[in-house]
Amino acid sequence: MSSQVPAIGTLLVNRYELVKELGRGGCAIVFEAHDHRLSRMVAVKIPIGIAGDTAKMGRFAREARVIASIHHPNVCAVLDSGFTEDGAPFLVMERLFGESLRATINRAKQLGVGEAIAIGLQLLSALDAVHAAGIVHRDIKPDNVILVSRGGCDPLVKLLDFGLCRRAARRRDGEDTMTCDGAIVGTPEYMAPEQVLGSTSLDVRVDIYAVGVVLYEALTGERAFLAKTVRDILSGVMNKRIRPLREVRKDAPRSLEVVVARAMDRDPARRPQTASELQDDLVAVKEEMAAAAQRRSEAEAWELPTTRFVRRPPPPRRPMRAPNRAS
Image 1 (cartoon, helix red, strand yellow):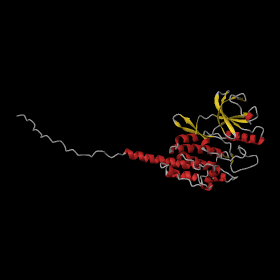
Image 2 (tube, one colour):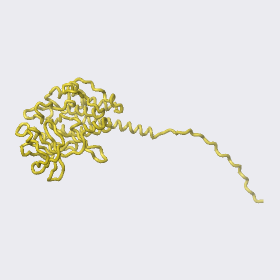
Image 3 (cartoon, helix red, strand yellow):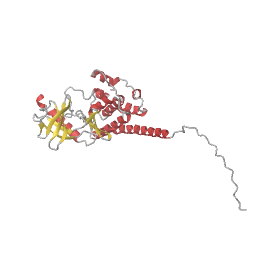
Image 4 (cartoon, helix red, strand yellow):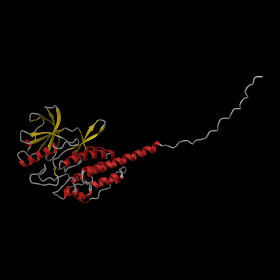
């Protein structure tokens, strides 16, 4: 297995030079690399321990095709693919310069209401494109959302890591996901109840649920289902009463509390049925907040006089002098 992980400095396909490791999980490692042909920095994702395993390599190739087929500014783009000298496949993706939503929440504790809504709208725009391609992401979480800083503009949201994606509401032979053997399909804190129950007919509503959990965490700074063990987390997903948003975040509009709670509903039928539907709900909250801010601004612009008006008496009139008459 170790021979399948190239060392820093390795030149892949005589083009991509591995510069440093950006991160690793149980299934893959992501490197920063220099693209010598186009003189740019890219990210290279190399799975661990699948060289020679036809089934797993097929899954990884399918992940590349899935992401490459989605052309959207909020989805991390796949630029190329290939094989290492050891026969391991790799993906070349755009190098994102920013921080994960997880890091942002850890740093800020609670995001501003407007900021959280703006991030949610971009994330849902990405998911709308993903779902239109017939794909369920199944692993929406703050770690997989990157905020790319842009001078003078709101951060650009980028959705990444499609290793657990699957065709919506299907499960056919050869259509497994890029998961590790024995791994839970998803991240426990963000899994919808139907994922926990192992449903074989998952649809886009599991991603809608996860967006609700992410929004709740971004607004409150609290993980909705934090626990010490996976068993306790999954039990919480199925049974725990979540504190209403406004108990934690007093400045959140009541309408936003309703929208987030609906997205996190345990019954898929009561959630928004599409990403665009949840996006419309958030836009309505945003417009409501803008209207309220306009009313406050107009009220503050009209100020009563601060001093009492006193009517001054008119100045005394001078007696008129008779005009001189010629004698």
